[in-house]
Image (cartoon, rainbow, N blue to C red; front, top):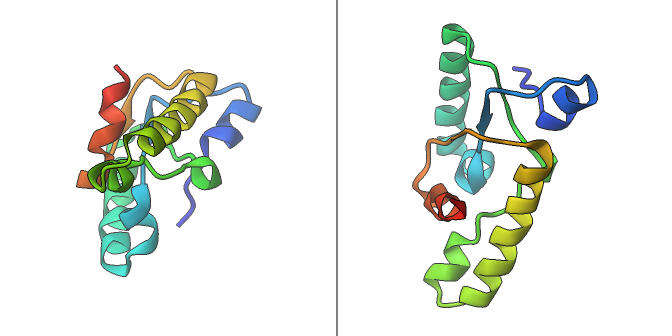
Length: 106
């Protein structure tokens, strides 16, 4: 299964319609990886122009926020926002609950 990264598209002068935010669970948890792969299959089947951040994707900071470390969350969110803004990302799709904190950028 091959999924393009935003960096690859950007290098070719392209950008995705949707950034698929894979998240920690979708990247590392074996059960969630199956869901991630299934979601990618759906995106491919319906023809949505999407990409992932790949190695540039960082934790949303939600776990540290829930643990009470608002400062660390703000730092992590700021870093993510910078990456998204650098690529001009307008739409984000995700499938896990972990990514709710990223919505606070708007």
